[in-house]
Amino acid sequence: MSTGAGGDVFATEPPVTGVDQPRIEKAVREILLAIGEDPDRDGLVDTPARVARAYQEQFAGLSQRPEEVLTTVFEAGHDEMVLVKDIEMFSTCEHHLVPFYGSAHIGYIPNTQGQITGLSKLARLVDVYARRPQVQERLTTEIADAVMGILDPRGVIVVIEAEHLCMTMRGVRKPGAKTVTSAVRGVFAKRDRTRAEAMSLIIGRS
Ligand SMILES: Nc1nc2c(ncn2[C@@H]2O[C@H](COP(=O)(O)OP(=O)(O)OP(=O)(O)O)[C@@H](O)[C@H]2O)c(=O)[nH]1
Ligand SMILES: [Zn+2]
Image (cartoon, rainbow, N blue to C red; front, side, top):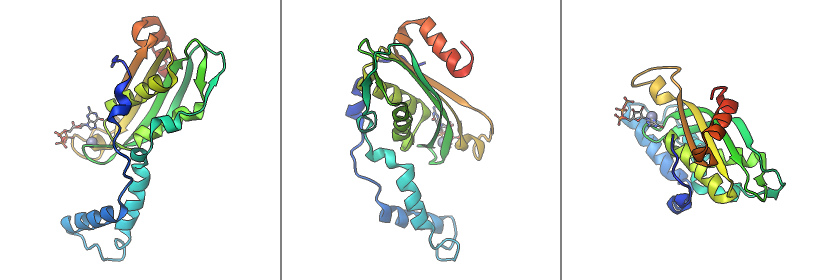
């Protein structure tokens, strides 16, 4: 369980360049040739352009910033835990460029002014980081650090459960294996009982 403090996550953000679609098209054509396929046959002729469009979507998070997404901040005077669980997420394993997918759960305890954000904004934040080449551990800590850095809550907990297609369809071939990662900050790192309460709400165990 990662317990490091948030803060410098924004300093490591990649530059916003967007996805270069013509370059992807050229590269995909090369890959098709390299696997011994004919990129000009009927079924494949539009594939490079399709993949370029799909990558535009799959990697859209590279040109989004967490602070653009976690915008709506209310002062609701609520200073107890807020937990959004079972946020469906799809990401791309940066080692093999195949999907890993599953659920993200985000809980936080607002600061003493009761600053909260819109619930959908937490799900949008997951997408900002998931739509990048990722490893699950970094995805988890980046979400936690962004919530910490932007909402300044008393604490945050992020748990992600995912299946990696690189472990399912190739390599070790273990369908069904789930990887669970967590990152806790603030009171969730300091207080066992607070963390246990959140964990029991998230996965029914403490
Ligand atoms: N920690 C971590 N490992 C990951 C993640 N996604 C993929 N991996 C692992 O990254 C490792 C890459 O290992 P390598 O030995 O370089 O690559 P490989 O020969 O394709 O490895 P195998 O998958 O074992 O066939 C594999 O063990 C993957 O299971 C992730 O999100 N987190
Ligand atoms: Zn992989």
